[in-house]
Image 1 (cartoon, chains in turn cyan, yellow):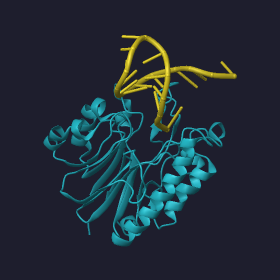
Image 2 (tube, helix red, strand yellow):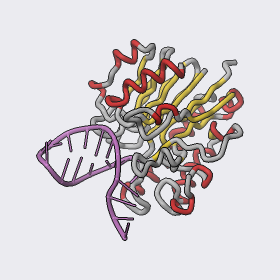
Image 3 (cartoon, chains in turn blue, cyan):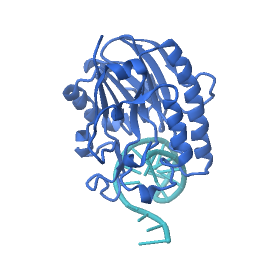
Image 4 (cartoon, helix red, strand yellow):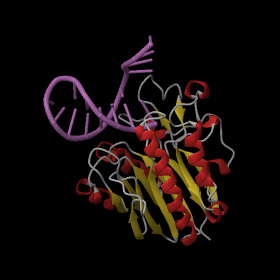
Length: 256
DNA sequence: ATGGCTACGATCCGTAGA
């Protein structure tokens, strides 16, 4: 069973990349972020033709998340219960006994800004939500764009980034607080090469220089960690014409 | 020393992303 997450940065623009990638990578479940389109404009027919059903929480221009699944999904829930938010950043669904929470965590803009405070409040609310989800669902995956590079090895130039948004201590603590629930970063369950990232700035030929951050992750419960057999980042779509600035992260699980 | 791309929506620039 293959689970992926990909911030597509506009589903309208990236739909051809997505459908090509689905055909090549053949994932069973895909969490998407930054759809940047409302539900009415979601390309349901095209994705259905590609073999996927879709749980969608869309928004015009900004945010927007979806879970694509080859098998039917149940218990679809949008947002974080009890956390009032206009921004469509969370959708959850159960597929083949696996509870999947797709997240597009706030960017935070700059340390100390209003958006940064929102980011930290949002993470606290997410943690409380995931605690309740874990009680109900031992097989839980939280996949998405967390907008946090958890450690210095997840940053191409830690000195240049020191104290900046995405790597600040408060953000990293908020991210680690999710692990305190018993979740594991699937990528770090395995030996990995150095300097593997999931996002590269469009500017400054950052991708060619591999000047990136690893801010997209798949967090898994203890039960799923036991079943996890691989986790990697697929750079191929980032090399295409008009790419998303993020690459897909893929985790594989044995079915037992 | 500061912007460097890209996407979007409303215009032909501003906002946001990270």
